[in-house]
Amino acid sequence: MNISANPSTKIAVIRARWHAGIVDRCVDSFVSEWAALGGRADDVEIVDVPGALEIPLHAQTLARTGRYAAILGVALVVDGGIYRHDFVAGSVVDAIVRVGLDTDVPVLSAVLTPHNFQESEAHTAFFRDHFVIKGKEAAHAAAQIIDARAKAALVNA
Image (tube, rainbow, N blue to C red; front, side, top):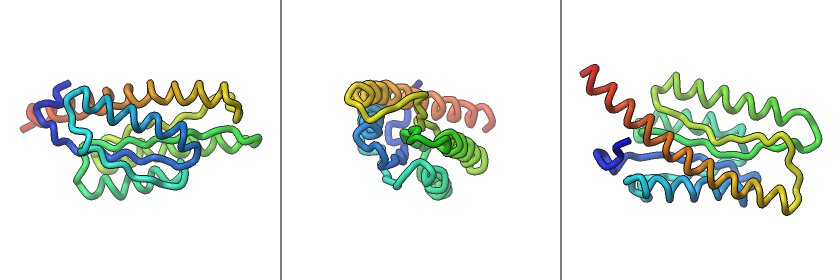
């Protein structure tokens, strides 16, 4: 990973506002880790959407601007007592992948669906901590894919 070769690389982070107290931990961790890797925190643009289902369309809109080297979608999709959370999460991740393929802009996912989530302090604390880890992992993934694409562009030039 060589962020320092192009430290002003723009990254868009699209975050769902459902479960904001958990989701924001991932976003904050991503920004911190991006800076630790040599990127600039002010090159990470954070965009809010209501929920996970809105992430793919907004990712597509942002990708088509040509301003971003990568886009990250962040959401927590939980089982609210009905089975639809599986469909929501699957639809979102499928669409995020499609956006990346259609626009040639990497769209990374930190859209997570826990097997079991309850609005208890223990579960909330666990997922807050887990989303910190996911933010760091996403920063590394963004750096790696941007670097790999830059190297591929040089080879193909």
